[in-house]
Image (cartoon, rainbow, N blue to C red):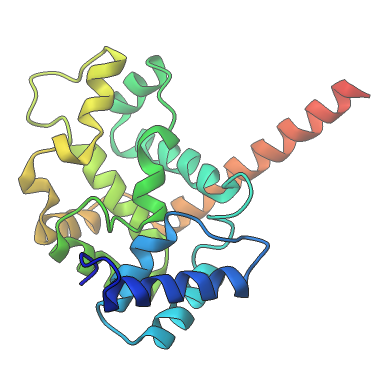
Length: 218
């Protein structure tokens, strides 16, 4: 649909992205918008795709694409806190290797996995996303992290090897399938209240750190 240079698909994609940039100039264009719009255009007309994008970014992904991507950073830190509950051993190894969440999860969350997972899995995730927002992104990410090293005899210690395991293209294909991902996502020992609690904790810590930095400068 988008492969032909100057084709209808590319023109529709360009029109929606340009319209959103004009609609929200303070945020402007972000590369991660394109995969979102591409998925939408596969299911609806150009104008509908535009307004659906607006609704997604205003209601579910606010703060994800502007400025310093602050909200993505907050959600990344929240994801690591939740990983401590789901897979404490991997969490410990990641901390020891100084691996921060943005090293592997930014594209997952900003593109809603549209660039990383098999198409049937993407569609299932998006269906749930429209019902409950970013919570499904956390759940799917935790499933991937929980199982990405299950086929290995032990979790790698070296930074490069561990980062390699965290790339979806290197994960076992069976854990990327829609039925497995969604089933496991709702088996996780994580409640909505856990996500909310950890996110609030991250925000409080960031505010405290910011105030401390300001105090030290005065």
